[in-house]
Length: 275
Image 1 (cartoon, rainbow, N blue to C red):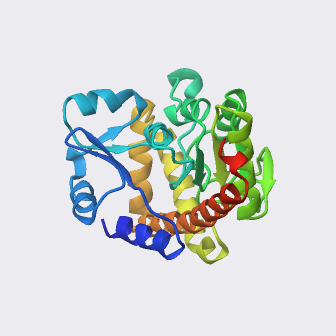
Image 2 (image 1 turned 90 degrees about the horizontal axis):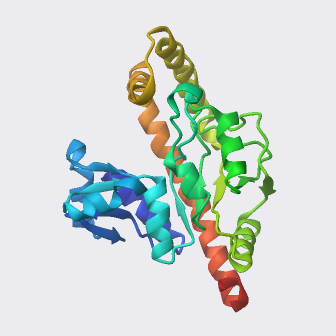
């Protein structure tokens, strides 16, 4: 709850109106008041994880839900929101050639014209396959002041992005151009972890490597992989991974706010950019 409030305040300080998306009692909210944010944040396991597949079921049953990237994209687009910020996107999981475990985030990016500002995808995923899948879906994967696709806590994955953007103005121009052209797919704007987080990020990345090795050694597979890894990484870092994760999200928010302000200014100067 505190993190959500801090993120919203960070956006307001930069001239952006926050619109946190979530579901309470079957009602989809695009923007929440303090009491709603607090309620959603304190639901814990009683709060459903809601992807595109689950939206109608959760609404029909009047349940509570936290939206994944795929559901957030869908709702944002319906509400006329052109970009939003998150920690990282889902992707193709390791061993997907057997499990077929591919995040719905990737297919949503292929059909919903919203820009997702994030730190790329976590290194626990099969990143080369993730980027190949995004290419097949026609998704522009842009690097923010980088030529490398960020891997969450690792600024350089060694994998190239499809284009580089060296500032909020260039990012805003890309979002506007996609809209003008009627491109129906989304954009991934990958923001590398900043230098002042590099030391913390390195600790988490090392823990990630250890957790992956343990996961393979213990034969953990399928949908049990991600929960196992996240729990183990948190244990190996004594909770430091959560703190670093929050700091990373806040950095993404700063970039997202700059891009949103630049996009609003661009569309104000050139009404055609709104089409």
